[in-house]
Length: 414
Image (cartoon, rainbow, N blue to C red; front, top):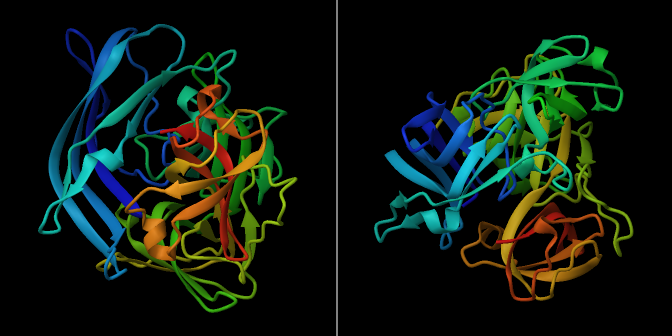
């Protein structure tokens, strides 16, 4: 699978005596683009008390996958409603401190295909609860936000709000003298309504969000459409096909998720590497990303800065076409087994043997990826992982002279 978008129609926290609604309106989300890291879905105030689990209703799911025989991109729909009961391993007590409730859909064990080629969903979730505090850091499982994508809809002197494509509500971020501004914005007074932004933020003890980094390469009227490259035309590249996993812009709709977006490239298109969470220093090769070094299987965020550019309406499996002024190499995730033990806060490399039925293998023919761990790579739970273990690895993917190579930002035992 390259994309798995599902329409969540309701999500409720459960108590011993009833339920508290978190989501009560249609909320489409794409589940593959983070692969075990977290995207904020809703930020709500709920009563203090003890919560034993959650329930979710999914209206329908859309799947885009690579047929392992024909290599063709194929789409299927799973009709709902599909109900999921999500028990917590132990009751969670919510007091005055903000908590992040994490719902991690295990797609490997939730989606099956029958003999007729129809897909079925039996949702299985892994849950965790996190809070900001000493030793917890600003990880997504503790309420931190890493490059949340959205369109600015309100601006004040020391704050701004954005509307994400895949969330239930707007999110307001405070800024201070430590907030970093990048791209088209170098200061708070350059943030404007309609601008597309990527925001990294920390959840504060009072429940507010403090932006630590704000990046924009999309002016008002522009478009961002992130996803996995499935085809590259030309050498140097003149056109890409990507499966959309995320996006932002006035004309981008949730119906584009899991659809194919055509990206035209010009000699003026700029290329960037998103190294905000990845250390690219001290490597035995030089990471390169440009029109001559862009490949099917990589995750990218193409942006059109031009006002008035629109994505055409969805027709079949196609979301439309944009002309990119900027293409940014994004992190992507993989599951597989490691040939070496993983020790936190160390550097080295290991070979990740990809799991069977991996779409990346079908696209590229590669069964393994060489992974570099840096001393700053986040090994979740700060616990050593033995050789042979199954991992979730997130980072930047390069093709180094025919060797698929990933520099990891996050490594976690699956």
